[in-house]
Image (cartoon, rainbow over all chains, first blue to last red; front, side):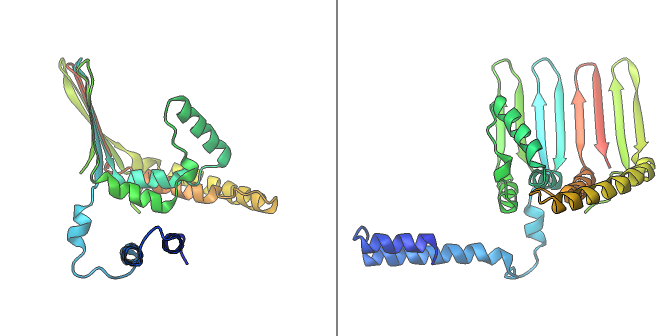
Length: 146
Length: 94
């Protein structure tokens, strides 16, 4: 029995929710599990090309400095994915140093916790991501995927 | 997986000079990279074997090397452009 299912039943047993509410929660839980299991199977019907084409191919970083310096970088998403996958293989000693250095610079990302499924989720989430920074001095930074 | 990058397309343009367009043939470095890669592969296999025998938790140097090579191959298509009032540099990995 999953932890979520057990929790719902505990709530029901404790009288905190009604039987109807418990049923609805269990149905929602089953639907969520079904949706999560769907992509791993061969349930995709029809031509997958439009879906593949809709995925972002590149990560763009555009910096327009007020003094006239412009930097424009186009990074293939597959490179981002490969880079993130590499993080799970970095020796622990080196990883600790990386994490320490990043936290010193105010970025508290623990790469030890990166799992392959997180990477896929992260890459999928990039599609909707857009970062726009407008600095006081006129510098602008745009990060997006397309 | 892609093939490793073959050409680095570099363009440098400045206001007072003619633009320079270079195709740097990275594929000429492949034989050297192959020799170094084979040597590194042998070393990582030995290191992994020793780590495994000594019971160390980390013994993935070979996988790390292979994945690094994969990441290198995925650099194809990367574009870096820099420009200011006087100079423009355009670098494309093909």
